[in-house]
Length: 312
Ligand SMILES: [Zn+2]
Ligand SMILES: [Zn+2]
Image (cartoon, rainbow, N blue to C red; front, side, top):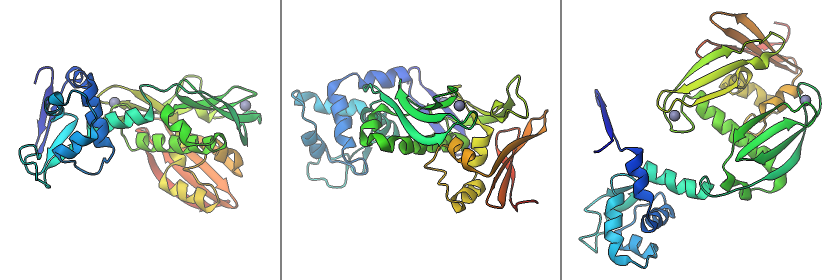
């Protein structure tokens, strides 16, 4: 396989196709239509003639050829012989591979095509740093929760094709849910770009002080594509299951609110640096007489985490 790669560990074999080869395969209208046709029922294999019916192409003589080209990368032949040589076969068929699903998903998500903007929407809470009014807006394929007074904020990618699924007033929660989803994947160690494995590190930016906990960041680097993604150490602590339970019991749905909103509404919220080298810190959330304390470790994981009653 030209330009491809393969690797083998005990009991695990992986063969990879080069990106050039894979993308070249997609530069054809019939093939894109085949993927779209299979994507209409993503959980179900389609027989040859069923798929052919679904793909409305003028040049049907080439249908076989193009389908064959996709098999092995974006399409998988399942059961029997795929149904081609046996028109009555009900067991065989074609389905999307993971990469095929990603391509179809990207068509819907509008990753390659859509352009969208949303004017600032008030989110109904105030800036943690200055008390100014927080708003959310959308531009350049990113949602941005930011303070209209001090300009501080948090930007993250959101698929443009998903915007029209929501009313304008639903967007702040939709963005917050998406953010929770992105951060959960990151904290679980998967790259948002290529799904590769990520390694985390708890870093302290130059100039960071105990009074300014936002300068303590967890940083994740992908072993495969070298993408680097960062988040506040406090966000890592907030999304720990024990902390999520604490927040839920006090009426905060961690998956539906941006973390800074919840931090601002807690009775107490602080980060205490435990050691400089290696860098460790303790994030403390307190509300209604109870607290959660979560220790952020040098490898950007949460180690010790405890529920306490206030005053402990
Ligand atoms: Zn502000
Ligand atoms: Zn990656």
